[in-house]
Image (cartoon, rainbow, N blue to C red; front, side):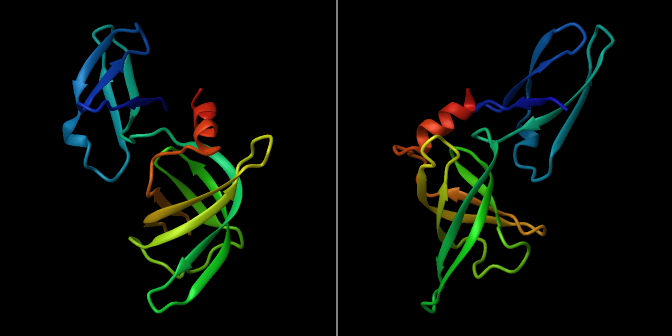
Length: 163
């Protein structure tokens, strides 16, 4: 299903699959919903169109990058475990345990240090501090980079993937 991206002014451009006619639509009422928003609309040409509303600030890219996370609990215990980054964007990443499902020593809202190797020519190593946004039932963890500035090898890597 095709995606329609929401601009910063909460406007989306709907394009008819049949005739290519474009129209802008205010989608403010959908921007705060947690679940996926599927749109269906009819064009005057008779075509029925369907799309998914993409509300992310940054595009995500599917990857398979090995690494590890490091976490210090409030009582001073230190945990390190292997991970696999399954998607990444300028704003954050989604990772899973390399060893399969299991509980994590952290909760939503905690901070972690993640280190992973890019799949570029040099296998560049990247280390970032992240905030845990979501822990899903399937064991994947959504995390937000605490800094969106990527002056190391991650910056060019993300630019290359967005091209």
